[in-house]
Amino acid sequence: MTVTEGGIANLTCRVEHNDNTSLQWSNPAQQTLFFGDKKALRDNRIELVRATSQELTISISEVTLADEGMYTCSLFTMPVKTAKAFLTVLGVPKKPEINGLTKPLLEGDQITLTCVTSGSKPAADVRWFKNEKEIKGAKEVNASGKTFTVKSSLQLLVNRHDDGVAYTCRVDHVSLTATHEETTQVLEVHYAPYVEIKHSIPAPLEGQYLKLECVPHGNPSPDPVLWTKDGGELPDLDRVIVEGRELTFMSLNKTDNGTYRCEATNHLGTSHAEYKLVVKDAPTTSSPSTASPAPTLPDNTGPLDSKDLNSAVTGNRDPNALPGPPDHALIGGIVAVVVFATLCLIIVLGRYLARHKGSCDTEYWSNCC
Image (cartoon, rainbow, N blue to C red; front, top):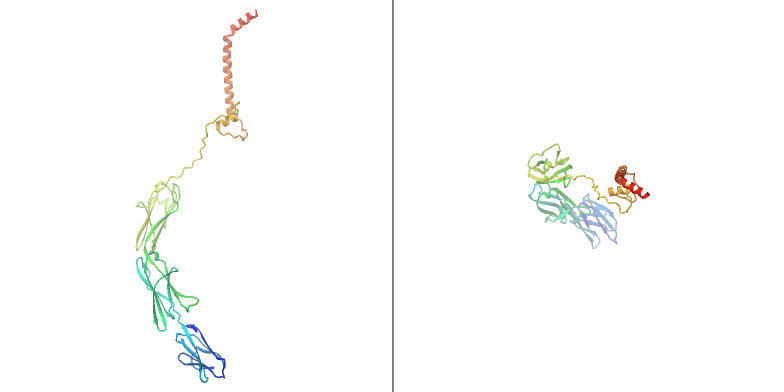
């Protein structure tokens, strides 16, 4: 049978036909453990479970690697009859340890991480994971008595992307049926900063609100940051507000045009990013054009009433529209024209009659006589 170190081993010996001869269990060193129901070896871990003429069952608790070996059940007849059972004890690997890591690391450092576990039997399997993704290490197995020490190594050239990365050493073994042993180390890498600028709107216009955010990346975190414009100080601090890493324009105008720089520094170096601001004119807010085509008179003949005249003037004639109120100014103008024409006609007719009055009377009376 196979038992994990620290577990319990139950050894049972049975015989079908027995003439009341006692059964005996002995260990690999040929020491008698039990003879019938009589305990022969002073070991508190060994206890009697069942003793009859046909069965002898004992238990060994807190099994150690030294308990491994061949156990013998004997029936003292003539000749003596025996049966043997081999007890295999699994050595449980110890929790792994990761060596070779110092904190903090600097970008460009080359290190070797070593994971070590001991006490396994048979030899344990050691695996590496980088943020839960398995990676391959160099494995080495050494025997130490009945157990094995297993070592696995990783060589790393660290950079800024390794900052915060978790390296896990996991041990798998047949004795760890429901779980596994593992140890995790998180890398801390110091590196010089690099900077980016984020803006709240893509195409700034006059009068708009604009926020520029300086986002520095570095370890240690570069704080505070420095804002400048065109290589000098920021102008008009009443309109341009600096709060931490943010630069805010409450209402843009073209005097804000220029190149804005954000600079960040830590003990490993300095970096900057630039944003070129070009403020464009705001779109004019004019009402839609109300120009109309030249007025045209209606095609139908006949007298031109006020409705037709109004339609001709405005150019907007709705055949379904109800007649509107009369245009008094237009009517008054028409009446004035008619009166003026009548007066002119009367004057011309009066002059004509006065010029031909005498000749008409002479001709009239001559015909009468």
